[in-house]
Amino acid sequence: MIPANLTSEMIANTSENNDLFPPDPELSVSVPKTVEAIMHIMYITVSVAAVGGNGMVCYIVLAYQRMRTVTNFFIINLAVGDILMACLCIPFGFVSNLLLQYWPFGAVMCVLVSYAQVVSVFISAYTLIAISIDRYIAILYPLRPRMTKLQAKLIIFVIWVVALITPLPTAVLSKLEIHPAWEGLNNTDRRYICTESWETSEQRYYYSMALMILQYFFPLIVLLYTYTRIGIVVWGNKPPGEAEDVRDQRLAASKRKVTDFFLFLIIYE
Image 1 (cartoon, rainbow, N blue to C red):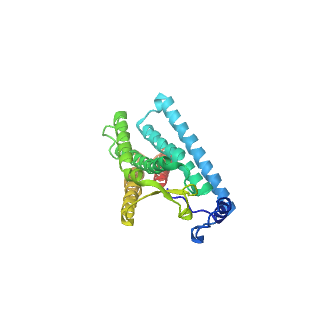
Image 2: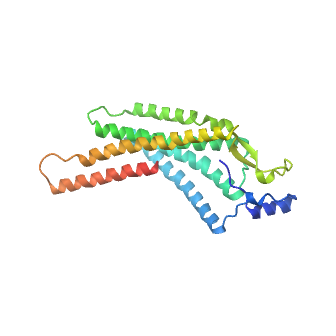
Image 3: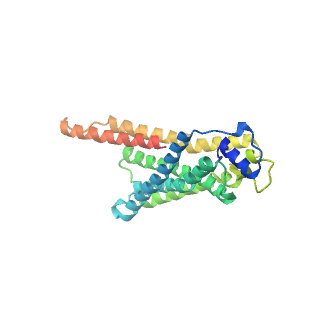
C-alpha cells in the first residue's frame, strides 16, 4: 500500500509549523475538495456496508441449521474475506491515502495491512472458483455424488492455506520508508510511507505479475469456462414431453435467473 503524495496545502502548513523546507513541487498532488469529499463518503459507505452486510450473511447461515449448505459455507468464506478487507484495508487506506497522505500507524500495522489486503483477495478469488466448480459438477454431471460438507470445509481450509502462503513476500518485504517530501530531515520531523522494499525493480515486476495472474487471470479463466459450459447446458436442454406454455415460461424464467447469477459472480470476480 503506497499512499499518495502530500498536497501543497498540507506541505505548506507543515513547513510553517516545523520550519521545514517545502518539498519538490513534482511530489505534490492537488485534489479538488469536492472529489475528496465524495471519496470520503464512498470509503465510509463501502466499509459500513461491507461489515454490516457480510456480518449479517454469516449470522444467518450460522444461526439456522437448514442454511448450512455446501454453497453457503463458501458464501460465508467470501463474506469473511470481505470483512477482512473492510476492517483492515479500507479504513487504513482511507486515513493514510486521503486524510494524512502518509503512513502514521507504525511498522507492525504496515506489514499486517499490506499482507491482509493480498490475503483477502486470494480468499475471495479462490472461493469463487470453488463455487463455480461445485455448480459445474452438479449441473453437467448430475448423477455424480454431490460435494459433502466435510469436503467443502477441507476446500475452504486449502483456500486459506494458499491465501496465507502465496503472499508471504508481501509480509516479509513490507516496511516503512521515508516519504520523499521529508527526506533529509531529522527523525522527529520525518513522515513515512508503507511500501514493499524490493532489491530490484525487476523483482517487484515479476512478483506483481505473478499476483496478477494468480489473483485475477487464473480465476477469471476458470469462471468463464465453468459458467459458459453451465450456460450452454442450461439454455441448450429442452424439457421432455409436449410443449406447455406455462411450464416453458417457468423454465425460461428459471434459466434467466441462473444466467443472471452466473453473470453476477463473473462481474464480482
